[in-house]
Length: 80
Image (tube, rainbow, N blue to C red; front, top):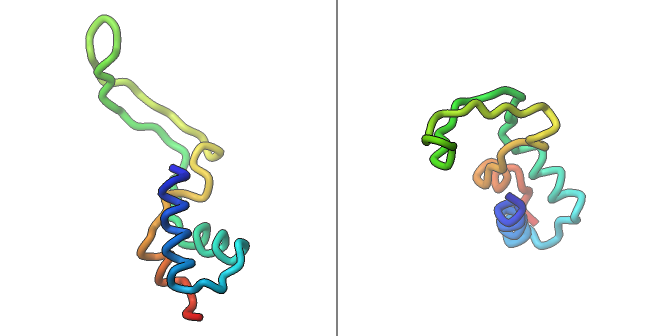
């Protein structure tokens, strides 16, 4: 979520305080783990009348640049 991305951005800026917002964004996007469109069976404990597995589906527009990867982003961050 946005807080985790913000936390990783703070780590990048701790490593290199001179990064511009555009550089931080580029590093985060370039190091993210892509999440392709698809579907998965997930447990829904609140399903009525009984808890069950349901199929959740998402498109290419649902995952942005992917899953933030702190280690990869820090590795891609240049030293000051």
